[in-house]
Length: 180
Ligand SMILES: *[C@@H]1O[C@H](CO)[C@@H](O)[C@H](O)[C@H]1NC(C)=O
Ligand SMILES: *[C@@H]1O[C@H](CO)[C@@H](O)[C@H](O)[C@H]1NC(C)=O
Picture 1 (spheres, helix red, strand yellow):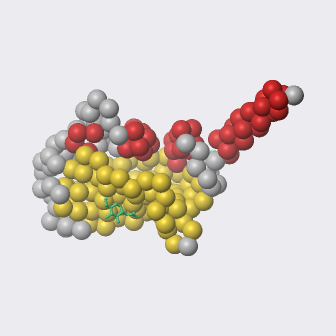
Picture 2 (picture 1 turned 120 degrees about the horizontal axis):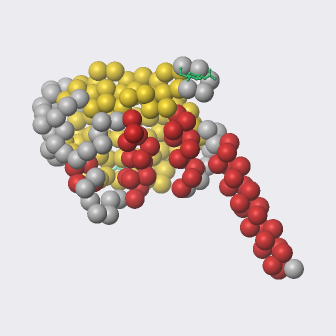
């Protein structure tokens, strides 16, 4: 009896997980970019584009004005909307220069990096001597990844990233998205 009940609970959990995974959909709702040091970095463009029902993407292009840049940190905060956006689970920073060559990179940073690495040219370690581009990252590429590792509750979220070069805050990007 106990075993049967355990099996039942186990399959229920599996089923719930399965359903969550199948039906979770990530949608970007807004993106904000702000240069804090206009002599250092300028945003050329940032936009969400909806091609059709199944193909929507996000693009960002940043001009770096003082290349090469060889010391970069990223501060990364996840927020969930409750009454306003409240910090949720992650608030951390990591060294963007060492991250990719580190033998054991920060797992959370790696998790989020995996979302956009295929669509970005920051897929190498420092120095950065070119414009930074996030090119047509499709929402569905994220859908497949977001719930696999840690199932998130549904809701409205925001990811805030501070781009810090030589220990000075240079730019902020905010991605607003929903999980339904
Ligand atoms: C949506 O647009 C993409 C790119 O143009 C295309 O490959 C895909 O077939 C379209 N999907 C639908 C459902 O029209
Ligand atoms: C995140 O941590 C930094 C210090 O590492 C702190 O200044 C900041 O206020 C924190 N942000 C949130 C939303 O907790």
